[in-house]
Image 1 (cartoon, rainbow, N blue to C red):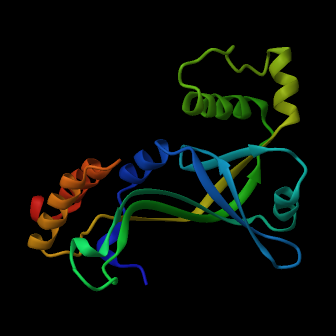
Image 2: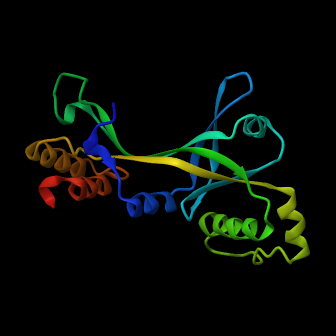
Image 3: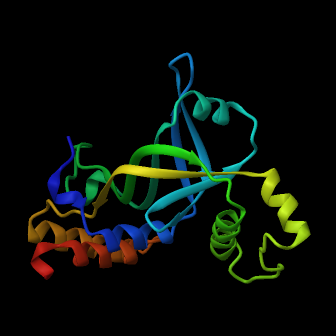
Length: 204
């Protein structure tokens, strides 16, 4: 069951999270009814998810058989050990994260202008330092390359988001957990503590 206190509905916040991520998981179903999850790079542009690849392969066979797909993006911020809140029981152990899941239909993108625009978005995300010629379908080198690679657009029917940062905790428990994260000081602990304050109803 999805807990409502962890649910995020603000489109701008969801979009900002997706713009900062480059990797997701595509869910498809094959002709034999067996599901497949494919990890791949993506961009999120104008409300659509895009991914690219070869025209061949099992993933494309699935899409030819059924265009119904799911797509999930997740980012784990911190593991929360049980002993932060209970000296004996394992039950409180958890993790804090952001996740977005979309369901919808996959469409092949064939227009070279759109392909060039989306691949430019890929390059801006994956190679922001530049170092390549602008992607222009009028450039003979790119026109051939754009035709040779598949680009797929996911048109979402629904998008749901879950940002879990202890919103269900009482104020004292939250403050204790924030203090312990700051004292531990690992990886993204400070960032997690800041997000706990951001999403906490007591800090509005």
